[in-house]
Amino acid sequence: MKTQMVYKTGRYSRLIRPLSYIADLIVIDVVGLVLFMDPTEFFTFVGFTNSAWVILSLKTDFYEVYRNTRVVKILSLISLQAILFSLIIFAFFGFFNKLQRTPDWIFKYLLLVFALITMGKFAVFYLLKRYRRIFGGNLRNTIIIGDNIKTRQLKEFFQKNPEYGFQLKKLFKVDKKTDLQSCFDYVSENEVDEIYCSVGELSNNQIRLIVDYADNNLKKLKFLPDNKDIFTKRMDFEYYGYLPMLSLRKIPLEEVVNQFVKRVFDITMSMLVIIFVLSWLTPIIALLIRLESKGATFFKQKRNGIDNSEFYCYKFRSMRSNNEANLHQATRGDMRITKVGKFIRKTSIDELPQFINVLVGDMSVVGPRPHMVSHTNLYASRIDKFMVRHWVKPGITGLAQVSGFRGEVETDKDIINRVKYDIFYVESWSILLDIKIVILTAINAVRGEDKAY
Image (cartoon, rainbow, N blue to C red; front, side, top):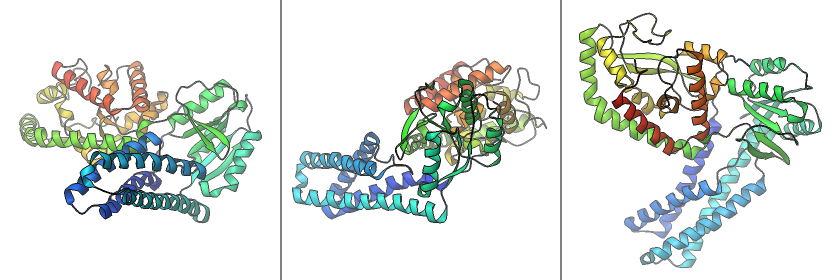
């Protein structure tokens, strides 16, 4: 199933979780001021408790609260967090016994902290529900494919629970012989965000077509399961009321903590390179570029980033000024490349200005390499699942590049393999994987690569 170009609209709701982290940590710290007067003691306490809170929250999924989460689930999360965090606090005062805080003070601290955090958590939860119900904001447009008892229950759930923010646009009646193109056209024309499917109403081939369409068009896809197998290992299980729901794939970098870790890594790496490398290397490269050919030192080009948004990607100019730079990649023996350009491309020095893109947030140090807009348009219509790589920020280097698929796309096999590695990276991200890719990139830059031209 080929794709149309899509531009995913952002939502401010993605800020709720990081703001919740910040608000809860502020509560923990401010209430802690009641216990401490000495600055040294206070900062020791803050460093320990903040770290413990973040790590504990990751383990207990304390912030895994969504628009469809039930109240009893929230209460169980709070209860578990309260018990474990209390044990940590008592352990802290047991270890730092010189702080001499009495048990009643500690209990007062914990009681006040969790009273405020609980009120804040439920306030946000219910205010968002009220906002969706009364003002119709924070909505997600949905369709349902399949007409049976379960899909009608889901339709009724959406219609009777506007506070969840799901706006059902249409329910499609299908059978195993239905041409699904009309469904896909409707999704594209009506800015549908999420597709819900009844597996029992669809053939395996129809499921494959829907999966391909969702991947290629950045649509969330969820299934109402029955006893039929869905062939994937990365399904995410959740409930809407009492209806079980399966999500197509879970992306690690959608988790706010993972985003934070990766962003800290990106900022640290980019600052080190900008301060200790680009600060003195840029004047030298600029002089060499200007001596050989007329034109700017830097070359900027529009490329597609996360959610298929466009941004300007920066490089040291390695070619003579030409009108085809935004249409055609460099090829082996390309006459447009200067002598200086050949050297900086071979050593990947030309890519170093992209650390500026990383610092401002358009790119990451590691991720799927961004393509120029014309190539994204081309590959999105020709290469299956090409658009999946746009769920995360593009990178200066990536798993595909250190696996032998960098540079010029000479055949469809090159781009197909690149997409396979990119999807694996999107679904399997970890900070250790990023570090491994950075190390392999540095080794390849020193050793030289055949396709670095």
